[in-house]
Structures are given as structure tokens and as C-alpha cells.
Amino acid sequence: MQIKNILNDFELDWASMPYADDAQIKKLKNKTILICGQNLARCICYALLYQNESKNLNSNIILCGSDYGFYDKAFDCDSFQYIDYSSLGDLSEVDYIIYTSICNEYINEETEFFKNTVNEINLLANISAKFNAKTILVNDSRIYGNGIQNRVYSESEYAKLEICNSKSIVSQNARVIEALWNCHKKQGNFELVTLRTGIILGAKSGIKTVLDTAFESIANGKKCLINPSRKKYSFISIHDVLNAVVFAMTNLKSENAYNICGDNSTVSMAAVAAIFNGIYGSKIDIAWGNYEEIDGCAINTDKIKFQNFEPQINLETALELSVMSYMKSHRTLRLSNSHQGRLTAIQSVQLASLLEIDRICKKHNIKYFLGGGTLLGAVRHKGFIPWDDDSDLMMLREDYDKFCNIAPLELPNGMSFQDSNTDKHCYYEFAKCRIDNTIFATGFAKTHTGMHNGLAIDVFCHDKTANSKLGQKLHIAMTLFTRALVFNKWNNRKAENGSKLQSVITDFCKRLFPIRFSMWIEKKTLKFFKRKKNAKYLYDGMGRNIYNGVFPAKLLDEVIYADFEGYKLPIPKRYDEYLTFLYGDYMQLAPLSTRLGCHIIEQCDIGEYSNFDVIKDN
Image 1 (cartoon, helix red, strand yellow):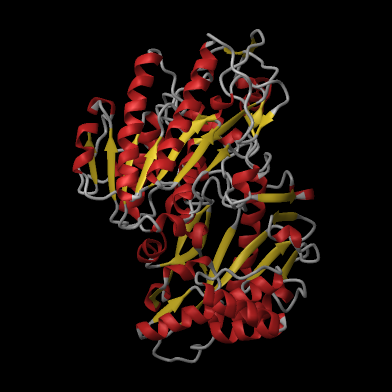
Image 2 (cartoon, one colour):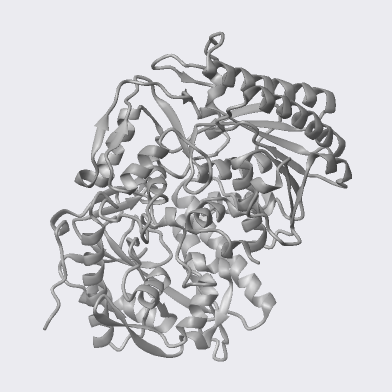
């Protein structure tokens, strides 16, 4: 049975690792990974099994423990096995060991548990040394002790421990665990990387937190008691923990400890209550308790950020997912607060823009289709994907060139056509129809202040390509090369094109060629097969779908009309084949945590359109 059919929506959300770097995950191909610990270990196992299936990694995932019943969702598949500690000696190879021990665990019988922990470490360290397996130790912020107010702890800073204090005992045990592993590492000469997490928030992960009662109360409409704190604490979503584990396996150097916490997720408990109020407003009743400090502390994550690891989930999203996991009825993400409450208006402006483009295309006999997520929304939702904030159109070359000539003359007041010819600051390879007097910019776009950065409809051209596999491969490679030339020149970035040789060549050409010349080469490459009469294949040379490869040209031969927000707009007649090519099982909803908009918008001002709505003709 496939793992995606076993896990619930929340488990699928974090196990699918939607924010992970595929290149890093693919480094785990054909590896044997031994995992040991409690609830976090089980989550890591789920995630690696999901990646194994979805990306055909052919990895061997081994879960080691003393209680098989704890892992009540063990999987019957060739890539997974459960073993107890007595069977460790039977292993023939191990590439990685992941040990989570007491990370975010609340242990009642500490003495017996810690005794077993020492035995586990001794046995696992022997395996690390025997196979020279890179070992990832995952601890948490309690290792720093009962931190003082306003202190944010870096990796080599520790608070004093109080004798006979329960919190100090946990901190002491965490320190002993790390010390014991480091002793074994010096003796066995294997790689060891240590991660120290903030307080983990993981919907349906089995990982307990002091906020669980609050989550349940909010989900069920009960009064929610929150005890404010004078200190700040670092939180982290399970998504970012899983990403960090893979990052540690594939990128981080041995003999180092790294703190990890979520995006803007170091706050006081009063700030947590304020976030709840911002999400749910009058729908919840929060009561204040007495000041009380919890386990954990505020941690500094600059060290791992310097290694280019960035958390992806902010505290608001992590808290909301946790509350949703306690709801009994069908759950969908709250959208009213998305884009600071602007999403409904943004989609209305997008719809009006689509209708204007549709009018122009009908008037001038230009064939076009809804594309990308907009096409998916038309088929799956009969309109916008509820959490989507942009619109995509696609055309064939002849229609695209015609549209680019006509649109600047036909678009109404308040809209502008943008491509590299009409906007001297713009070097996108595709065209956009922008809404004037608005700003809707990603972190990338906002750096180009001279460029029109208003709300936009993206217009892509799907060009002809070679019929032979070799010709297709060369065409795609040349397209990616010329796109990299333009992009890296435009943004003054060093090229990272996969291999060092490719990057060196790209950087050399980037410095040598003026950007307009590079753009000319790029356009020539895209249109290289323009006059090919018997072309059987197309590719999306302008968009991200270029990485999907080529698809049969016949998929975009015929147009049919589909319902889209109460209007009829064109989609490919063979939309099922096309969407399957793009997304696989396209009727499967995106992971829950990704449904807050497909772009990270850093500047948004929709001005006069803040209350915009489309009035449909009777």
C-alpha cells in the first residue's frame, strides 16, 4: 500500500515536504537510513518513505526501537523494515543514522528512560563507526537550561542548571546525550551533526506541546486559557524540522551543532495569544492566566542560516494548522486573512483582467487557453484555486506574437502590456498584462524598482521543439542556458546551473555578453523550431514547466470552454492529458500548508481596487 493512502491530510502535508529542495532529497537515492527515537523519529520515517515513493529514491528506511506497538502505522513495503536493538548487528550497510532521543519528548520515568537512552547511543554509535555512517543527532532548546529573560542562546551558550529542578534534569540529560555522542564520534571517527530545535508544532505528529490544550479549546469553540510569559521561546513547524534533517544529511559539516527554529517564530506566550486573535478574532474567547514560564528558550539560528538553510513556515501558519488538526468537521484553510485580507479583491481584479484579455482574443481571432494553476482551478474548482493569487494563460507561437502586437493597443485604461520590448527594465522571457497603480511584488521583483510591478496576468508561449529525443534535450538545455544568462545578468547573481563547469561557462558568457544580446539569443532559441511544419511536440520554454520536458502538440490542438467563476473561458479539449503531464494526480489537493498563496509577496498595494468586485451582466 502506498504511504499517501495511509496518512491523513495533516501527515501528508508535512510528510510530502513541500518546501524541501528536490536536489538535496535526490542525494539520498540508494542510501540506507537508520532512524531511532520517539515521535519525531516516526515523523522522519513517514517523510522519508513518502519521498522514497514519490521520487523513486530506492532508499532503504530502517526504523529501530524497542516497542513495535509504538509504530502502529508500520508499512508493508520493500523499502521499509522495523528492527529492535538486538538486530543491529545483522545490518550489512548503513549510510545515515538519525537519532531523535528526547527531542520534544516529555518523559515521566526519567531515570529508566535515560538508562535506556545511554544503551541506545552505545549500540548506535558502534554502527556509526562500523559503516562510517553520517549521524544526525536531533535535540531541542531545553539543552540550554532555564534561560534568563531577553537572552537568545547561540550554540555554545548555556544557562546555569538548578539542582533538583525537573527542568534542569531534562537539560542535564540533553547535554549528557550530546557529550556521549561526541565521545563516540572521537573514538569511531564518523561524521556527527547536531540539530537543536525550538518547540515543535506538528499537526497530527504525535509531538506534544504546552499549547495542545489551547489548540483543542480554540478548535471546539471553548474558552482558551493562556498563561503569559516574561521570556520569549522559539517555535518551529515540523515541516522545517524535516527539511533541516535532510539539509543536515546532505549539506552540513561534521562536529557542529546548529539551532533551528521557524520563520519569525521567537515570541512570548502573550504574542502567541495575539496571533490567535489575529487569525480568529471574535470567534475565540481567550482568557489570561498567571505568568508562567515553559520548557525551552529563545535560540539564535544565524549559524545554520549562514549555511543557506532558511525556514519556510511562519508561526501563524504552524499555529493555525495545529488548531485545524483538532477540528472535528471538514477542514479548509482560513483564507480571509490571506494577503492581509486582500485575496478576494485580488482574485476579482484577476477575473476582470482575464475577461478583458478574452474580449481582445475573441475580437482578433487569437487562440489561447487558461494555463498552469488557472487551468487547474477551472477543472478542479470551476474558478480560481481558493488560495491562488495569480493567473496564467498559454498560447502557441503564432497567436502569442499576434497578441503581443495587438494587446498594447487594445488593453483598456488602467491596464498595461509588459514585455522586454515595452518595459526597458523588464527582462522576463514571457509577457504580462499589468494593472496600473498597483504593486504586487515578490522578493525578486521588488528589487527592480524601475519595472512595472502591478498585479498581472502572465502570458506564456508554448513553442515547437524537435521530434527526436536528442534534439529535444539539446533544445531544452540551450533554453535553460540562455535563460540563465539573462536572469543572472539581470540580477547580478553568480550562476548555479547544476554542474561547476556549466556554472563557470554561464558566468563567463554572462560577463561577456550585454543583457540585450543574451535576450536576443534566448528568443532565437525559443523560436528555433518556429517554422517546423511537422513538429509533433511542444515545450514551455518560458515557464517553470520546462522541467517537465516536452508534450505532444496535439494536446493543444482544440479548444473547449469551461466554467470559470461563472464565465466560460477556453481550456484545451484534452485537458486531462495535459494536466496529468503537468501535475500527475491533479485532482489531489496541494499540501495544507501551501494553501496561503503560491507566491511570497513582499510588497502589496492594490489601491483603488481594495474593494473591487466584478459585476456580471444579466
